[in-house]
Every structure is written in structure tokens, then in C-alpha cells.
Length: 149
Image (cartoon, rainbow, N blue to C red):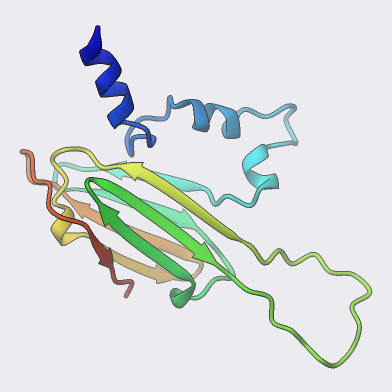
């Protein structure tokens, strides 16, 4: 009994490959066909593709710049965050303003075969692409910051 409880406590972040977590169910279940909490809260959409050689993560994040992102890896948890600040303009007055300047963070538990020491990231055309090579065996390393190309 204690082993199951210990395992649950270790896995507090959603897994990169599982889409069954309580947080994902909450944000991905619409109240009706036109309403979604993740859109309302400005949390970006994410796709994960698994091949024999790697995991490919794509995040739709238009309107951001490379320097707006921060990608950290610590004890097998990949944390991706972004913050866009408002550009204050001294001239003119807005009659309507819909741009959303905010921040967001997503964290995922990497699979045990992820070569986290060789993770690469690239931001291009409004999409952040992260590649996590696979080793076929357990390959965890220490935490680090991932540079975006």
C-alpha cells in the first residue's frame, strides 16, 4: 500500500506521454463546443510525437520571441515557461485592446529513456520545437537550462 502512495507523490507533474492527468482533463474538457478553459487562460496547445529515436514536442506560441521562453530541466521534469510583457506606448489612446500580455508555465515528467543531456530547442514561425533523444534505457542526468536556437 505504501509503495503506491510513494509512487503517486513522485509523479506530481503530468507525464509527457500520458494525457490522462486530472489537470489535463480539467483544462481540456469544454463546457460546450465553443468554450475551453485552456484557451481562456491562454495556455498554449502542445503536441508530442514519439519516434524510436526521440520525442518531439511542439508548442504553438505565436507572438512571442525566443528570449521570452525559459526551458529548465530538473530531476526528470521538463518545465517550459514564457512571459511576454506589455510594450508601453506614450502616444495615443487605445479605443479597443485585445492583446493578452501574460505568462504561462507547463511542466512534464520525461520518460525514463529520455537522454535529457541532449535536449535541443528551436523557436521558429510561432512554434517552439523541443527534441528529446531516446536511449532505450534509463538515462537521467542532473538539471540544467536548455538554450533555444
